[in-house]
Length: 216
Length: 260
Image 1: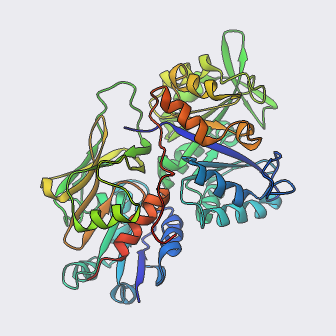
Image 2: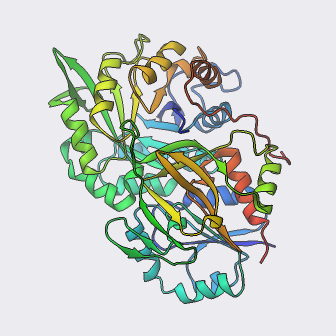
Image 3: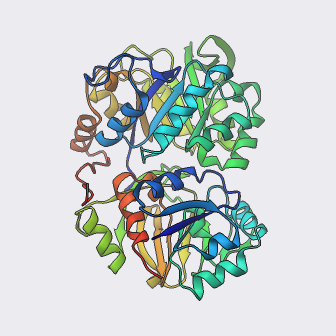
């Protein structure tokens, strides 16, 4: 049976992620940051609310980094980073200074440029997803909601920074807001979303369900 | 393309919706959790709860409402009413609110905005502004519209943006409850003077009002209470109307999870 661990490192509101996973999962769902729990997980979720700086500092303070890396890279446990949780996968972040990320997916997190005057920051609300690649994951996701790659599908975003991946092939979904915004990344067993699946209604729940189907 | 958000607002008193609701299945004042579920199924892009009693002793039913809604309703939830300090914000967030709206307390202590937005992220701090027209400008009112602060709305809007507010919930007191449409002049002036999203509120009576709020008012989101409560129109109808007038909206109630 699945055991989903939502990594607790003092990042704001993780109750929403817990609620959504609980709703769709038949397995156990726990909020924790103990190494013992992390090691027993079938799936790991790293939420992130706040700034890159506050999140990465908080995460580093937990002293789980070494074990987390081993669980993800050697045991290949499926891992999902949400919002700043995804941004932290990057090499570097430029919010409130210049900070090193986990460097699990190469790239940089930079402030969204808004060439058009009427674009508000934060990028807040529902935006259309553009599938850049078809993967087993996206096929399975679309099948769940009975949608096609040509249909308009939206998800809920709220952020001011954009993860610009170094390798285009790591970017699976994007959206447009003044510039191309990375909406989903993936590499092997590591997944990340800029949008909030836990707040993206039926699409979001289907996304989480698809993630929980991933096997180590 | 980023969608214009349609946000139904529920006024909650002692754990119940206070504005009467016409849904047959929901007798007495209405169960806010059930109501939120109906709205999210109809396509609400977010849901706002306003705790209208909001004293600390009476807060418990409200916390239950948020907790129960958040565990069943997977769109963003904003909660407001009686927020006095960071502790209140945290209390709401812990129950599952995604954003917390601050009104009077921000006027009394503007640093509260800065404190909360740096602690919880500016995306979850909404500053609510109640505006009333005075000759050539609008003044900010607090305490549920009872006290005129004498502060100019445009100046205050710019200030809250600087302090770290993630968005502004702008209510026209002159229009509230009149069904004569949003105050478009006010909305467009505030929207033009800040770079954070502005939610227009107060006065919406029909579908045309929603359209004007976007096209003329320049709002990023539109909040409405009674038109939806009294079923004068539905979220779905409003969205279809907006779509037919080239406004980008989210219409995704086509989705059906396979095993549902």
